[in-house]
Structure formats: C-alpha cells, structure tokens
Amino acid sequence: MLRQILVVAALVGVLGTAQAGSTLEAVEYAAEVPLVELVIPSAQGGTLRFAVCGGCETQRVIMPSSTGYLVNNRRVTFEEFAAAVATAKASTEIANRSLVGLFFDASSKGLRRIALVAPLPQ
Image 1: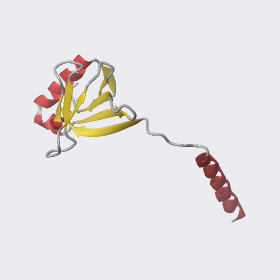
Image 2: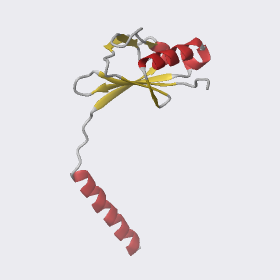
Image 3: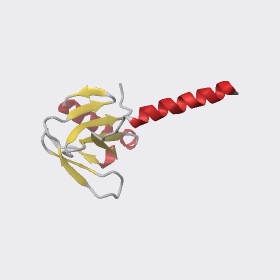
C-alpha cells in the first residue's frame, strides 16, 4: 500500500512539474474535407474551393507556390497531386471514401499543405 501511495505521489509530482513549464501554442489549423467537396485549381497559385461537408458553405483559399502536397503520406508535386485527385474522383467508390486534410498557418491563415488520403489502386 505504501508503495502505491509513493508511486502516485511521484507521478503527481512529475505531471505537475511538466505542466508548470509548458505552454501550448497553435502553429497551424486544419480542416478535414471530403474529396467530393474539393475543387483544385488547374495550376499552382490558383484558388482552391472546398466545403467541410455536403451542404456546407463553400470556402475559397489561394494555393501559394509554397504549398506542400501529400498523397497517402508521400510528398508529391502539384501535378502528381492533381493526377491523384483526378484518379480518386474518377471512381465514385474511391471518391466517397477519400478525405483531404487542409493545413493552415495559424498566424497568416495561409495554406501550408494539402494531404489526400485515398484508397488508390497501386
């Protein structure tokens, strides 16, 4: 029993110390978007249109040249990203099972990266 009390006291001390010196600061915000609610521009630097749900208001954001692109957690070029989006949208089944993560800078609100998660054919 004494051993359990000492372990709990030690954990409380460690957690209290860890929390006292740390401050969390948001560096980016994210939105999860169904692929079917996403319209990408034909070229980098264009306007991306998206809605976070069917029937939700459409949002617009510029895709700056600094935007990073990922497909299933692999870095790709804009052209490869656009091709993967087109492939996924070509199949209703794949499109309905696919999501896009949009990651925005917390201070500037600019788009940092866009990530497609889709069950694409190998």
